[in-house]
Image (cartoon, rainbow, N blue to C red; front, side, top):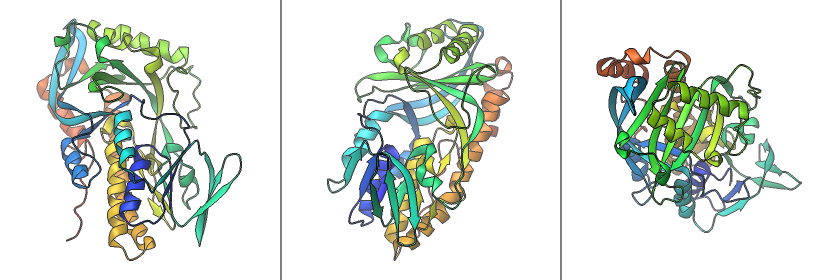
Length: 402
């Protein structure tokens, strides 16, 4: 069996296949360089973490930071750190992508071949197997192929329903600030707090994460806004502008909003971000009708693409592989296991995308009058748009039948 994509979802998928009894597993990762230095942050709801820990995909040894509360602030009528509008409980564990990937990579048995610099250009399914065609020539044939290759998935393109992501109409600017570069006073940003800086037509959420290699603490921020109308974006091509390639126009647009609407402390946080640690990500929506078809299986962003407002992208990918392992182990054949996986995860993927779309509308496309909100209105508004505890941070896994 093969896994296309060797990031978090791909490493977890390889682990799932070996636990399900696959005799040979090969992971193909297109990146040739190190993945462990990626400093992007992510958060995992404590209840979803408990499920993943019980399934053996996470544990307390993975570096993390405890988050307890999410707050919303405005510069209007506030001081150096802004004026607090309100807050809600936020029982999450935050991670840095690199250390999380490293921990999952270390769990893959030595029997699994992990091949870097392997670009799969085309996937050709047939009744008796799946052929992977590589850039520069060469082919390999497998009984089953798992697509963990993100929102530009070549595995998804080979399915009978090759859906493509639809552009959401706005962007996410991302950045990470090493802890030693965070501005004073440190009391302006309490420990355990995920702070949302508000402005008309968007917001920025910031929270602490482990350092890029799991040492120390960094600040992770994600800033959501519509790009300027003059921005040249290939919105039909779902991609990101990685660090070092963010256009001057997009940088100036972001900086202009920060200067106009952010409290001084949070302006300093953004300005402390090294240019090399900034990225821009166009956002997309995608919910495929099937997570599994014949000899092809999709996990993570290859299966569904949800805007990051959900606070559950990594959770959803890991939940996919938990269910894949469970389905394959319980089935009498891999074909039966794929059908069971598809039946359980496809509806969940659609629900996640729908909730993320609703959160995006409420926080970016049709923002409230932020400055007029207070604790009561923040609580009511958040409860209304987030499904309460039922959806934000990821839906609960179905319990396996006894």
